[in-house]
Length: 304
DNA sequence: GTTACGACCTGCGAGC
DNA sequence: TGCTCGCAGGTCGTAA
Image 1 (cartoon, protein in one colour):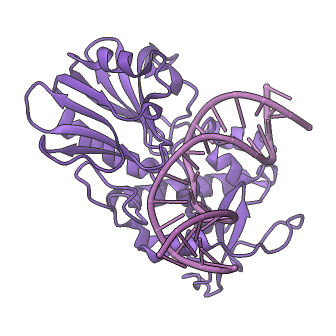
Image 2 (cartoon, chains in turn brown, red, orange):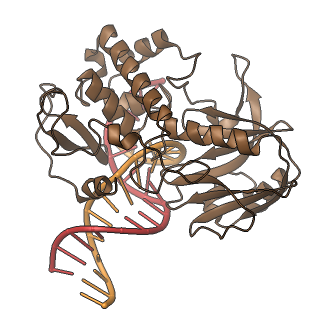
């Protein structure tokens, strides 16, 4: 599933292959892929035609192509989105949602999305209080931990001021962006923190350690080309990442912890799963009992 | 204002 | 063999 490192890999690919090219034709195969575009599919195509891509930016899991007017092509990969640079005569993928060609007649850009949680929209850019120009719907997204301007002190203060579980806070894109279920579990494992720990019980030192581990695991994932359990995440050339072999907790139910040898446990968390070491990540006192295993995650692991 | 939770969506494996 | 069900999870809207 695309989280910050995976989105950054795609952004870099697009920056290389799409920047300075002029869009000549856009086709929307599935209207849900442009559901967030206010004017609908026809307007989406019209607004892109003739525009030149100036650069490609990202904040958290959102990325956008800055166009040569005041607009941007905002893209979110959702759970299964892929942006592929393909030869013009490449056959349509089974879940091709949007296809874009360029005036230079070289490669085409395909937006492929099996589960249609992702999508594209053309939006006007607006200036932030820090002088940055962002698409309107990205304004509320916090900076991510790999952003050079990420304010660590403000994050520590904001997290400790919340009244929730620490993993919920890590997944809150208004607090810190780019972290999804996989890297939240990995950062918590590295910090020996149970996901249900209260944010108000977190000391400044523990929050800083957690943040450092989140930065570390995502930097390593980025260097490996991202994490992939199956064909749902690929870069713009259709290649999978290799970081899944280095995951310590996520998807490793009933496998020994590499640190202490205790078994990794899977628990239900907010309609999804959370993985932790039974020994290194002890639950807070108020936390309850074991949850039965899921078949789905075992399947995901079997694809690696 | 803050927090929690369900809906959205599709492909695949398990179970019957 | 074919059908049904559960599961993966990021974001948003709504309820508490």
